[in-house]
Amino acid sequence: MQLSVIKARALVGIDAPLVRVETHLSSGLPGFNLVGMPETTVRESKDRVRSAIINSHFDFPDAKITVNLAPADLPKEGGRFDLAIALGVLAASGQINMKSLSQYEFIGELGLDGALHPVTGVLASARACADADCKLIVSHACAAHAAQVPDCFVMGAESLIDVCAQLRGSQSVRVQSNHVRHQQQQQPDLSEVRGQLEAKRALEIAAAGAHNVFLYGPPGTGKTLLASRLASLLPPLTSSELLEVRLIQDLMTSANANPERPFRAPHHSASAVALVGGGSKPKPGEITLAHRGVLFLDEIAEFPRATLDMLREPLESGSVRINRAKASVTYPADFQLVAAANPCPCGYLGDTERRCRCSNDQIERYQARLSGPLLDRIDLFCRVERLDARTLLEQTSQTESSATVADRVAKARGRAYERQTVLNADAHGDTLAHEYCSDLAKQTLTLAADKFQLSGRSVHRALRVARTIADLAAAPMIEKNHMLEALSYRQINFTRGAF
Image (cartoon, rainbow, N blue to C red; front, side, top):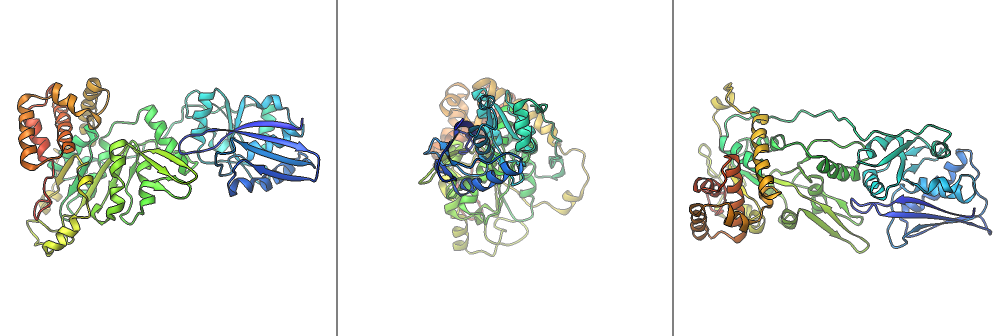
């Protein structure tokens, strides 16, 4: 046979479109041509494939070889097509049976000795294979990882020879189990935080309704300590959420992903590309890596304002679209934002023990780094006050653990799902106001909106927070006390002493 077609998968964001590796052998001067919009790493596969075939004791055809990666207008990158190209050459030269390849898809990078190496993005390929009802052959090192996709038949192989042996049936097929056990990591516990009852309450509300939260106060009061405990209050990921998280993490590494909810804490020197994603070949940023988890921005006022403003659309839509001349990629970015900041450059504005040394101009410039539209997308603002040494050092058994709070959070989330199939952070504001809010609570919200000039977005966010507070109290309707507590977490003015 002089023509063969092998199926493989490209990688575009978290999707894996089908690529047909078409190989044609013809007479003429020996050569190896690769077409179909290959990137540099794909063009280099010609040398890897040649050496792998020869060192695997096959004959490399002495002919003009043309390999087309179709569709031609889809960019291809990485070494993921090596295995498919090598099998295409062997099938076109008649060294393996083409009929045995039609039900398989092949992903893997070849070494010069014919060994099969793992690549990133195998989970996306496995999900696409399951939808197409095809079997997937990958490196044995990442087969168990790929087999986490339900209904995907995955085979692992060590080398090119191993793949050919399995296709001929002369070697037993190693099918990986779809149930991979992970050791649960010990998370920081809320009981380790002394005092700070108001901040703990804010974290509980944020966890129950998937709200964004802003912690501010003097340095050393426990803002970072509190933020790191939010993930321990969230319920375990569902199977579909876990697959989404693993698909994203698999884009960055071929190793098995952490089964816990993501907790990302980029440094304030991170660039816009590192935070949001992008580059000449669009890659996911921190907001995508925090999908279904927590994004913690410590010292948020130290981030460049232009970088922070890029979070405004993802906070609303739960996704980020990166447009480039050659590609347009959409990544999921449904995360909870936890921000922490000092109230001023010296950090002691409003502190009861230390005097602030900043001028009004310095304070205004510092606080102006956070734009109004960004702050408008945050649901809960909580000041973290300084604690005395006696409170910090005392041993108390009354501090609630993360497990205790997480149980209340899970029940509140269950009530929200029963009522509207989504968490309160994504609930429709008009529905909450008309069907689940008492007249007295609506009157309270109206008065607060008029007095403090709340935007329409702020009004709906206060309403959603109040609904979460009512769910934590197992109340069917939003009452006045729920609304008052929700309004107490709204930050209104950025004046001296109010940040």
